[in-house]
Image: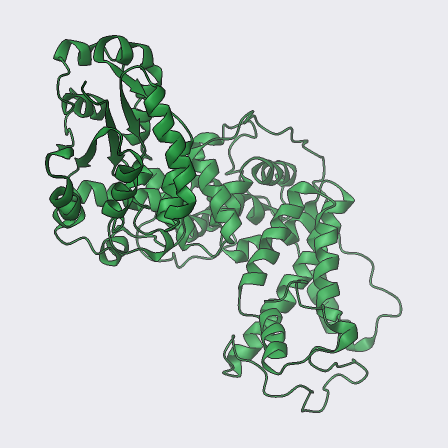
Length: 525
């Protein structure tokens, strides 16, 4: 009696593998009736691949045994498909070699399926096409790479498939089947796989219904993912930006934005009667903060569909225009340069903010556009915007918030961010590295601000409480709050006074009992 055969499709990644798995599942009845093949579609395959790729073969034994049982219970020959059985995607976990664990994984499968005749199938894709496809997969799910050239140089891909498949071919011989990946549209990866299985007739293969093809990101989406990976955004913001770009949100409908009649939004308050004389010069700056201007409206209609603008890239030629910013047409030209290679929604945010720095007849329009952009387009904005535009948004929430909570959030974050920026700039002027630890645990110089308390290293909860209070304020309004939370996430990951305080405390072994848990973000680095 002939032994049952188990056919195992291994990959590699991005050769129509997920489409193959869908097609196997969707055509199970046809495969069984006409081809004598039972697809074994089980999450155990992914579990086994994960354990094997983590070099936990012993832990994978139970799941492998269950897969063998499923194959034994099937009415005929079986077919399995899981691209992760080739190994982890190159670029993951700093892996430079292409599928170095391929034979080790196959050997574990072969041992578990020893009761059957087994055949393994591996697609040979054009190396350049596959490397580009693997790069895009890394872009989608990871943040290490932002240029194809860098990814290609990172990989050890010389003699790509010969090196990857040599050991499996030597051990398995004809049981390890290499399939040329179809380059045209007439033949699919699924059809090529079935054609490599002995005994299947063309008519039976032709009866298989094709599953929907895997849709690869467009060139524009790849370009934007590269921009996201190069941005200064937090890891979480980058992840959500790419998710939003590739998987639009459900119920993605325009936010309801109220146009408020606040054309007289700024008026100079009366000068305080008892203002200290030393502040008189600064008060003159207060009087000049905003001027009335009659400017044209260069903004789009408020009901514009913003979704297409996510992938419309701002193009600018030449250098920064040497023009004044008094005219809004000039300011818009400058913004086009500033937001070159960014989505149009980023430019529109900058344009709205620019109007809201002026007192024009279009203030209500600009304020509504600003609110709508942050309500609807926040994933990409947070994943792409330079930090300076987050700070500009803080001031805009302060001046034009739709409620008191937005104004409180904007004010708190504006001063927090600008003082942090000023202090870090001062250190740069003093030629002090941003990641240097402090040489002393106590202040060494005379205080320049009489009466302003100082503290010893690790002997205060001032910084922790400042950060915690700002985070608390940010929870009062989702739209303004998420912008502040992203700024704080960036600050936590950066080299600033926060990281220096914490790292210096660790370097000096400071552990004052009442402040033992007072790390800058309540989290020991």
